[in-house]
Image (cartoon, rainbow, N blue to C red; front, side):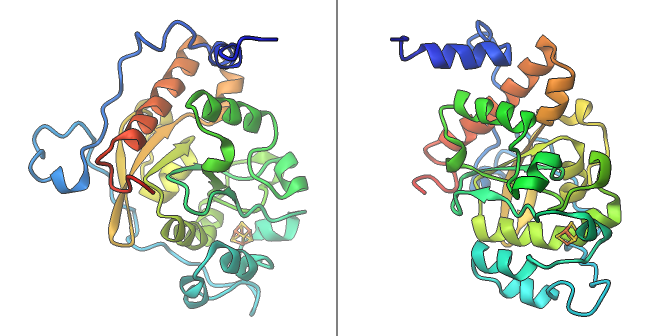
Length: 271
Ligand code: SF4
């Protein structure tokens, strides 16, 4: 029978971080919100870039009744009711091409939330986020942090598959943004990890390349809270660029997110 630590070692080996974990410099952890003013000079986090257009833009339906109004979305008091409300959404052209709407899944009270770009072929078929090769890698990364997938929440900027797995057009992302923000309000995660450039651009208005900004803490205003955001590479990019440097970068970013989660004085400690 394998030693119980063997699976952990295999996962770290897959991520290319075996032997690097101890040496990897810990990325800075954002200070707790109440401490932020006092530590303004020394704060290791990067000042978040405000969303480009203030509150989430909500694109009206292309046809009457094709999607819930902003008021209906705001009034959804649970993920279930929100999912029900958006199940027939046709607010952007992606809706017409989907097989299944991929709402997102995981713990409705997750402290760690991942936001990717949009569903791919496997996700469209199954109606679940991150179930293909990229999903397998994401699962391994979550496991390497000592967590289970179902302890987190996983979703995307758009809930319907862009054709040929292209990047969602800005108007498509904006049409779905109100739904994503309502999910964040309902879940209230302690940390958000954005996967790739698209969620960072759409949620925070950061248009710089992900290679430049990954690993740098941001903050996202969700309701009356600011949630720390850790940008990192999309798992699909990691699979395409399967280099030691890319894998180590992702591992360091995820460790930073986990370190924030593990703070005993974190904003949602004990949840
Ligand atoms: S991607 Fe979002 S906004 Fe567009 S049709 Fe699907 S659920 Fe509606």
